[in-house]
Image (tube, rainbow, N blue to C red):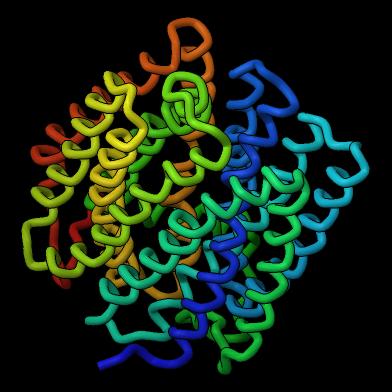
Length: 406
């Protein structure tokens, strides 16, 4: 049986905006290489993309539990349209600098931090509890097809035609996404279990409530801490992968976009596979998925063949998506609706906390020891984490009540 039309429209809006994201995120580091040859400054683009999450993701989660989650998404899509067109103008007029590139990246990332909190919290209102893995898998698949499969090669090709072209398409995608989202009917404001006349809590107290809930739930605390470590390790390689691809593998701008296609295909396979693994023991599935990703990166660090690297990136991406879909569905199923925005934001806050440090570490390692060493560190870290996860995550319920530690 198909999922509701309201969910399909959200999925379409997400796909459109993610197509623009895939184009932009591929073009941004390539544009940075046109502005500087310093790998540390190029890695700064990834840092500028991650740091704003630390500032806006927690307030974004609180807003998602206060306001209409759909309307907040629409308004921020329109705001991102304006910022993206401003970048187009700066590039077209020759006024773009690496500093301005950081600024625009940070603004778009700030809006995305809030949009993601609202979008993830909408899904449980659109589909039944038993369909959360399927809905999550479809959202992941759409994101991977548009953001990873179609967007990167288009971004590389457009940048080769004109520096401003990929960012003009990105701006248009935000506008179209808002238009589609407007057609979704209904109200998506969380209803808390308190009287309307109750005094309104401050945003600080609401954020603190979400953090406390997450920290006192043993399973979610463990998953959040592991996700933080995995995100940090992954960004060591992610921040300098464009340098590894263009210099160590010798790929062109257009070929760099093509190199990102196999991981998108692998991610789609992972999104298809994840709902079918729901009945398996979660700790085992998560352990195998991350360990396989680590082995892939260890092999990648020794290769000089771009096609072989792309294939192994696909294997790694499949494991990552299995982790993402299963852990997200678990959160959506077990977190109370009136806390879903804040607890989800708290979880992702911890994850994104480590990413800028990973990107910084990647730039420093690559600058001192080379990009292959940075990729090796990623592989070793993911493999060790995958092996340890099996023994550290023991409380893995499905629809059972979670165990508190306070």
